[in-house]
Image (cartoon, rainbow, N blue to C red; front, side, top):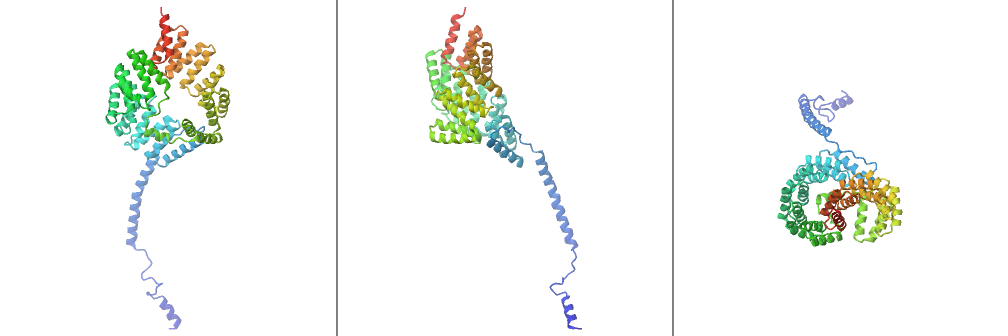
Length: 460
């Protein structure tokens, strides 16, 4: 054999590294095992994938809200939160945050939809039933009580706002025993709690025991968080006891005090912290003005003028109005209305300035527009009534005052204005009823007292 032939034969020998030591055929046993493993993986994956897809397909859809006219910053924040919910439809935190954003920017019913879903996903978190309850507190207090009870069952009196709110709604609905129980439970853990003492004082007044109200109300009047409303209720209690001098004294103190600040409430503060856009910056500007931080206020005002000129002119108009410069205030507020024709605040403030300048027809037009934009705006009905009365349109003014009372049944001034006009119309019995209501709400109201005494003197 030649040398070349031997070399080719050696290259084909089984021991050569390029020559397989066994045939290149698949191993039947290995193939069967691989097939079994793959089939098992598919069998396990299909139900899991199907379950996930079913959960995703059947998950509730976040509410769609009209954002076309919303502040761009607000619209972006809400839409981002909606996308988070779509991405994690079974996350209580995602649903809750969307609800908080919606509540912070005035989308009340939609926010409650989100809070209800958050509660279903995380029934141990008290904030979700609590926020549902506060969202229904005005429109459906009976439904609110159920939500608030669930929140209190979860958190007790820590924080105290849910139990105190539940007690106050129970008191409003005539559930006096339950209200008292909750107020006393708060005091059991915090004996100096001013809001609970205020609640017990109010409850004693409502129950016809004004003397029992004096002690709790004196304690709540010592707190800067509850002093104004405590003085109002003390005046009412002394009025019920027939101690006119003390009632007048407490009423005068109440009128001198600024409004009570909000009670500390971490759940509501979480909501407010999410405010964005011009409303948040406007609130910040007002805070800076109240704190006397003028340089910071001016810098923020310049930013507002650039980003939100309508808000800038609204703030400027209010500032001029506070200083009594009504001509400049009117100029600024007309600019605010021109830039934001649907702004309730701008139109209401412009109407107020026009009323002060005795331009009753133009002021009335502003207040009418406010009631069209916001049909439950009680102060607008009240001021519209005054404008109409100033023009001699008593019948129309009477209807406007009646609407103000319907929307704000606990507003002493509205009842006094209605009573005064009814008296001028010769409807003495109806006038006396409204004036008595006004005095129950504001015992130190000297004008209401004089009107009621005048009706008594003219009685046949």
